[in-house]
Image (cartoon, rainbow, N blue to C red; front, side, top):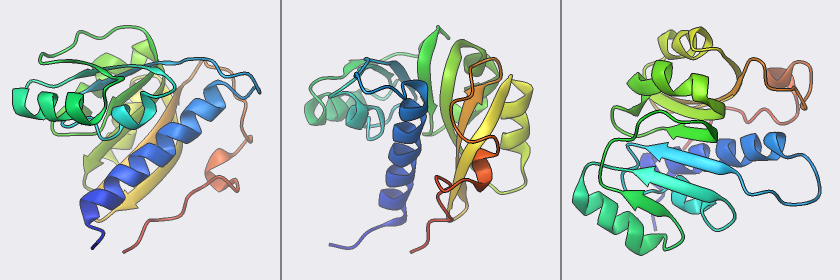
Length: 172
């Protein structure tokens, strides 16, 4: 089975989401995070987290929403656009979701935001929305960012981009 660029993209989003939730709850005892995935597609990222966390996904394409519900039975999925709401993590990785970052990030402790291009404009939007970029992965022309709300307590290294947890550019 050939691994596609989309497979690598989904894997990068999942890895950064897992890292963010580990930073959110560094303790030994598991706590269920409130995770929201907007423009969820088939819920490839949020669905993966739904076995251990409270995940709500929103997707306006009914066929994709149904496919996500079949694949990930623990996820709560709605065929609509969500209004920004407080959560532990928001995932804005599919379709037009990155343009929602300015609205959503002030409500989330952590975020996964992905977009096309490497000009740094998405990173600037994340910072302007009150988040600090903790890590990033580049997959082809797409970049996936893990960010933390600025006032959230730092539990990782003082310079996380240079830490051992930094996941180098994903290559084919």
